[in-house]
Length: 253
Image (cartoon, rainbow, N blue to C red; front, side, top):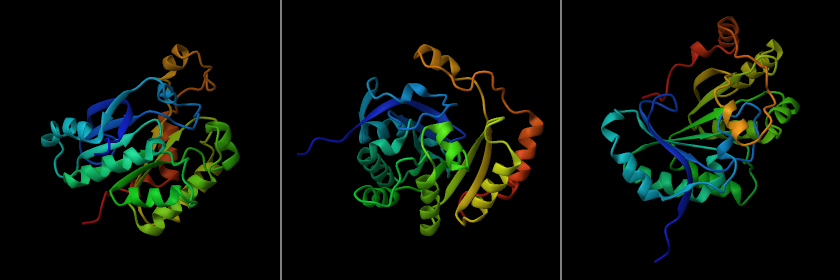
């Protein structure tokens, strides 16, 4: 008998309420190729400190909280970057669907390509995925590279591919004053979102500094030192520019 795949797990949360519809059991995987300047979990980047679980072990743990999920809740796999562990992620979500669980992936999409072997593996993963949470970190590719260490061409192509296949997505945009809050960028972001037909929710997330202590503990320089969270007025303006109130649904029944 083949040995069960095992995932490298950063942490687990039992009652998440903002990472997908309903109440979620959150599974954070280790490893991420991006280096976002505002990352609040830089401790997920490295792969040398983690717990090991099989898919069944994780799902057995999740089952304990199933009574709280209601009709929309389920599991959300985040990170780090969950696509780093593609084979394990696919097995986890396949087994979750066998148990009748709603499945959500929270991904930055930086590994996406339509080239093989990745593309075929990703298409298989999508068979077991109900919803994706995707970031638009910066609509401008060059500034995206400054902010995250990578450009965004393939990430925007992931959005287009999911639109082509009709896979539901939620879009989240971390608003960082002086970085991606200019009207020019918000207008371009809004135009891109409006070109898609599978968007169920758009959320503006205010930049915060709650994770900066982790950078210091890891001996890392925090590039956004001195940047303050956006004001209520700036958040309201960004919500208006991105028409977030127009995206209220999850899945049409």
